[in-house]
Length: 120
Image (cartoon, rainbow, N blue to C red; front, side):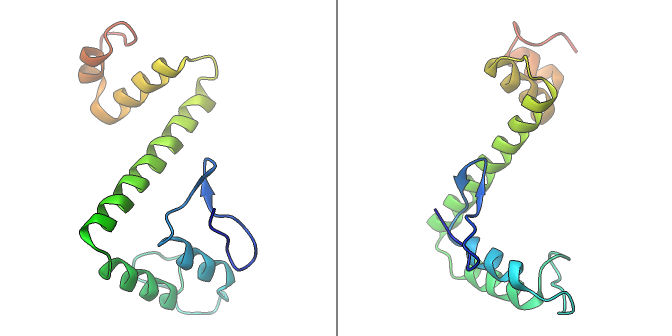
């Protein structure tokens, strides 16, 4: 688990964030409001963004692939959590089918999950 300077653990759905994301989050939590903001994210201090960009540039292709995979998994977990919130009685396969309808479109989702999806 990755801990910020303030002692908070940075996680998404209980899963620790990638270690290269944690330093920027530690800095972001301690930034004064009057500091210049970054170009890529309006809620980030410019010096925090510079550190993050430097970390990205120093990553190997394998590290980048792992980071992209971790971020994709976190995004999927957040999307499924939102679907669970909106459809509390849905089974896990139904939630996956709903996610497929959102990401792939209803027609393709129906072809993949014909017994779980209504015809578009």
